[in-house]
Image (cartoon, rainbow, N blue to C red; front, side, top):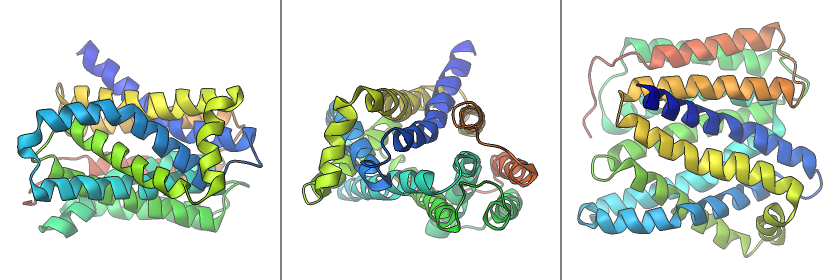
Length: 303
């Protein structure tokens, strides 16, 4: 039990540190780094970190790698790199950190709805309720004055990130029928990193960012400590080990609540972000949406 709690805490802490660390990078290097360049650097270094694991698990599970599974893993990488990583960094640059932190609560809702749309079945009562509650929370963020740092464009990009993450989770669900969670995670990072590293060959600013985060001490600590090591390696590994010890709904829900807590504390202590009445109300709705979305499903879609 204690080990499970530890793995869940590590997962949530790792996920929760990515947004504050990304915002810190923007504050430390206002001229050189932006959402796109941070994404390329993150994808490149995370891809390198996961490459040994990818080679090991791909070899060990090679019998399960039929054409359809390989196609799904490549698709996951394309979604994860430019989609999930890219939209997350750009949204973090353009809207309030509190919006990014609380919007984590929408990702299970998006994953559940998109899985149903892709694989058939119906959206049951808890998922419909979670969708309505989450929409109300997101609407408060979009139309209420929650923070001086929030922008409509940033919130729109954040919503696109939620959808991209939901699509990633839905495709990953199919891949997990054939291969392990560690291979899925490794493949997403390696493929996504390869795609964005290749793209950096044509954009000097992106290429420079890959080296800048490693050679500038003030950038290296938040980048490698918060984004690559904790968010990119420790959290996924801890999540996989936790799934072997407890139900997926318990592990996912607890980890995401820890993530929201870590991100909220960082937003207040590191960036002095103020949580007004509208922000708190929206956050409560999104946290509630997360809780409702994790209620057991009455029926399971076929894949």
